[in-house]
Length: 124
Image (cartoon, rainbow, N blue to C red):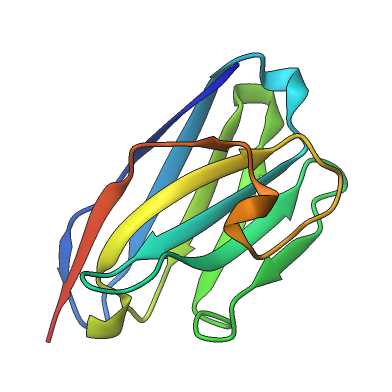
């Protein structure tokens, strides 16, 4: 079993930056891919970004390309999401996810473990 805990969510003004963190514990050797999803009020949960363990291939949703950067530090079992140039439409609950599969996928079904989420609010 893998446990995931997100942190770093906050309220910021448009144009600002935030860094989210996701720390994994438990059987951390059992997952290969990690990702971030988000869910805005009244909307479906959507893929934001994903990253493999090594050598760290990444995948981004078109809506965040060039603004968000995903990274991970395997030594401390932590994944990050650096979010720059934030927009009001980035407002959502952000969820960390991990997968035991080797393929990096942009769908919820590609992930086995989920965190509880952290709230990001971007005001205009």
